[in-house]
Length: 448
Image (cartoon, rainbow, N blue to C red; front, side, top):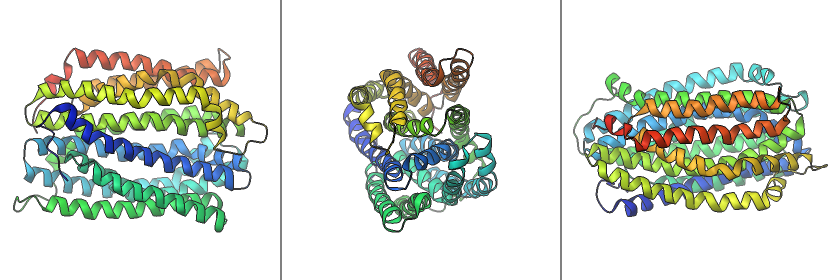
């Protein structure tokens, strides 16, 4: 169901739109966590299995970076066009995104098959988990076209103000993935390959279903014949997509360097980090997804010329994000060790202690992530990408540089790596807040 977010009380409209987004990401992260739990508890030598997934995680995030960047570009432009009721150009934006994403996903799949193993070598992946890591990655990259189409379809659904259809699709995909994990790992004894193929199948079904439903929805707009592909439209999408892709990609590259540091501390460090980063990603992705709703709200209202609604919506989005973030922070601080321990059978407990140490350091600073992501959502929705790029690259550069300095010359070990997270978050959050409150985003606000 399409929703015009340019009318109605901003707080009510945004709340109604954002709650399904949060439930969606909760299910998405739930099945991601379930992957790791099943691998860590039901595959022989679960700690090594979890370490294998940990090694591949930064590489998979590099591919996801491109998918989510295209999602952002398509979603913001389509939101703006939907808000201005320009349905003909909306159809052109959607079809242009389809064609572009098809070409990009195939190229990246080929790249992944050729270079995943060399990347794992550069990351100092231990020999005892190298083969499983490479196997997991090779299967994963085969499903990249599904991943990319699913993300673009979700972006268009969000642009139309529909957060419920993706929710139902994701619930089905998540539950299906968990069932397939259990069958392939426990019943068929497929090990790491079973986890990877389960994800491949679940993403494939949800991607095809999303594509079919969205095309029927778009066909409902009566516009006559429209342009199938437009270089001009691709350029507009790229103004948002490319900075988003670069941001996500450089973050992923930064994570590759950080993963290399962690790998040098051995299998227990890799396993503990793998579990803790899943829990951390749950929080960050939840807030990011809800603030993504704010980006769509911003773009629709800018398309309709209603900038005052953006300010009101921002306050609502900030409160909603804080309500999600604060209880999870308390949970991690009080019961982080037990949560990390659920991911694996750790013989000596070292991996659990390492993972809990990560949560103790980073979780008190989730408030900075909340402030940054909500300000960034307004900047992105308004097309003020230069400010978005400055804040996000500041976070990345600080995190990578400080991880090397703290763990190396200063001799802080893994704790030094963990401290690079909150320092990067807080610094970039201050910049994002400044850019938002000084109104730089308003200079870029216009209908496409």
